[in-house]
Image 1 (cartoon, rainbow, N blue to C red):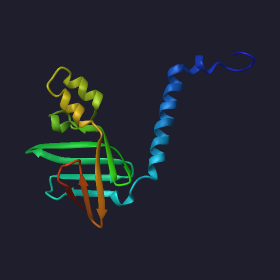
Image 2 (cartoon, rainbow, N blue to C red):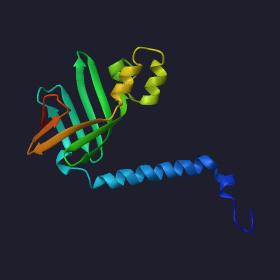
Image 3 (cartoon, rainbow, N blue to C red):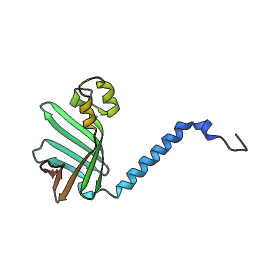
Image 4 (cartoon, rainbow, N blue to C red):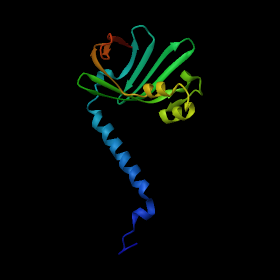
Length: 156
């Protein structure tokens, strides 16, 4: 203590302040994006062929699909909208897709599990941010990624 003032660096350490700054930046980003969300997206949507279900809840999303018999693909993360753009950023993949324990895994966890395997590039791909154009009309959501054909989703 110097002149009656405690040296907070000695008490909390440098990493404490780093964590606080990161939390503040994340909180400001989420709160700043709340106004940018399209409330028409909130709810559960099913792809027209019934192969994928996606749930939008404010800034969070979850997607479930069945890429092969007996395998469930689950991805969850955050999303923002900017005009007619929908930006999805995955944070977790469900372990059932890889035959792992039935829980959500972050990218660092999956990288550690599959280090040195052929899955590394695929894992990085699964966690990459995706931007699509979108339009909501009533109970129909249309998404288009690049030059791919549009995907039609129906509100469940």
